[in-house]
Image (cartoon, rainbow, N blue to C red):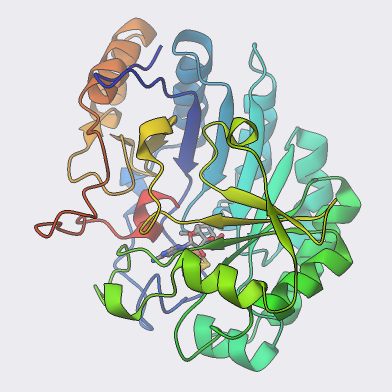
Length: 329
Ligand code: SAM
Ligand code: SF4
């Protein structure tokens, strides 16, 4: 088991497959991109499958989410999914993606054993999309979403970040759009994880703002806490249900007490939290011949050091060295 000193058990593994991306979302990375990890530093497909195998067979991980960067840019993605789906006990497998290219790969991913996708989309307006992501790819994302639904990667969830002056008035339109298509929309509060360090608490659109905006058009009924479990999203029934909307309020309503996550970066570092300032190197041990028992012991030692919370509420909070795209969101 992956236990920490606060009594939490990590059963949900987020694996970053690459730090590269074909978009440049303003809340994530600068226009010119970042200096990407060199190929030899990246875990190979075999190394990823081995580490996921250790997590699943020895450490009690039951859910694995592939992310990045943009995970669809990883050439071996379908094979990685297939090999992880063959693990026993079989983990639940999901993907967080910007949706570009999903139109071509959704069916193969489903056949390989992927269970669900979250597609990030912040606006229904192609011009606003271009301002937020700095790329003209709105149509690709919409086609990717439709392909995911057709392939049975359901429930298809849509992640949206609201940015002041860009899409902050769009919450009700986005929800109406998602409800109509049967996608489950989740708003994510903007977090201080952008590479440019441009996040300002005073500017961010809070969960309170989002809910007030949605309530101008919809009746929202809270789901019971028992149904939430360790999920980061608080959820509401929309106009009595069955459609739901979620809000992930990492900044204003943190959920660290029930956190069940452990993270693996594309270069093989274990992170206990998005906001952690420390990492534990598994790649070095892996490449110097450590056996599975030793790797598991190192992973457990890393998680034992997990902090109680993100530290966002502390005035002395310092943003982690790696941005979201290199940690794996
Ligand atoms: N490229 C994929 C995507 O966009 O879905 C996967 C990686 S991305 C880092 C994962 C999620 O993090 C996306 O839903 C994105 O909107 C969100 N994200 C990125 N930067 C963020 C920030 N500063 N605050 C909140 N969410 C952020
Ligand atoms: Fe790329 Fe995802 Fe970051 Fe946007 S949020 S730049 S799609 S990694």
